[in-house]
Length: 104
Figure 1: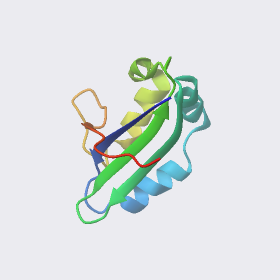
Figure 2 (figure 1 turned 60 degrees about the horizontal axis):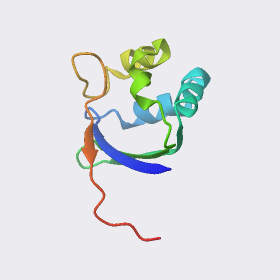
Figure 3 (figure 1 turned 180 degrees about the vertical axis):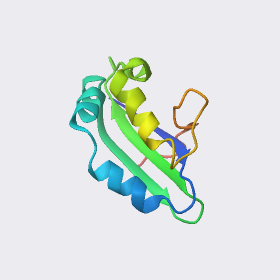
């Protein structure tokens, strides 16, 4: 199991809407994430700047690279595009974060 983390950016004033949409996460999207080998997925927000910090675990045989090609993933990105920064293809702008410390 590998743990990865990344940062995204929420548009100003969109925290409540972001949380509302994630509370109602589509079951087919949750299934797609789990099927891709993702588990223990957390997203945190820094209200001072709208940065979202995501951390998740993925199996060694994960298929995360296939997620952008799934219709449900594309639909979710379209759904979220009005409240967060996105790439030209609709994917959320993501900045990978490197681990610098881990306490077991």
